[in-house]
Image 1 (cartoon, rainbow, N blue to C red):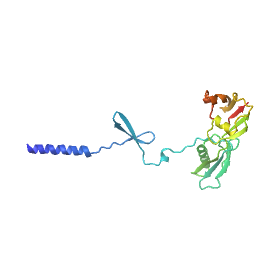
Image 2 (cartoon, one colour):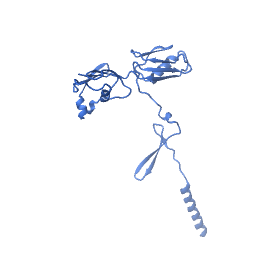
Image 3 (cartoon, rainbow, N blue to C red):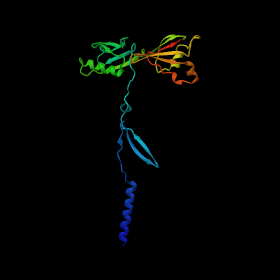
Image 4 (tube, rainbow, N blue to C red):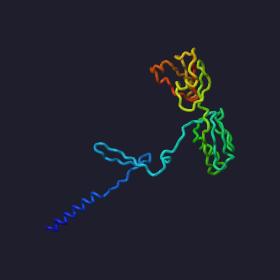
Length: 224
C-alpha cells in the first residue's frame, strides 16, 4: 500500500515538473508581406505580435520611384565599366534623349526605373548583361505658369508638391487690379484642356477650402 502511494506521488511530481518546464513551440505563419506573426490571447482581446525575419529592411521594402521625367530634366546615365557610354543628358522638348550607341530614346513620361530598363534592353545588342543606373540630377520640368494680374507673372519651377496658395507666394501675390473671384486654372488632361474656376475669397473664408488645389505640371493660372 505504501509502495503504491509512493509511486503515485512520484508520478504527480514528474507530471508537475514536465508541465512547468516543458515548452511547445508553434512556428508562426508568414503573411503576404513576408513578416511572421503569431496571435497571443490576452484576456478578451487578441494581440498580434509581428516578428521580422533576419533580412535587411531594404529587402523587405525595396525603394521605388514614381517621378515621371519631363522636358528639361537633367539625368545621369551610368553604364558599369563603360565610361564611354555613361553621360549626363537633358530631356529635349520632344521628350527624348540621345545616348551613345542607342541614339534617340523616349524619356518623358517614364519613371527613372522604366527608362533604365529600356536602356538595358537596347544595350543587350552590344553587351550581354549591361548594368545601368539612371539618376535624376535636376528637376526642371515640374513648372507652372502665371498670367495676368500677379506681381511676377511667368514660369515658376516647383521642386515639391505645391498648392495654389503656396504658389501665389512665389509670384508675390496679386496686383491691386486683380479680380480674385474669377481666377481660372487651365489644366491639360487626356489631350484636352480643362478650365477650373477659383475664387480666392472662398479659400480664405474657408467656404470652399477644396478650391486650394494641388498644382500639376504644366498648369496655367489666369488672374484677370
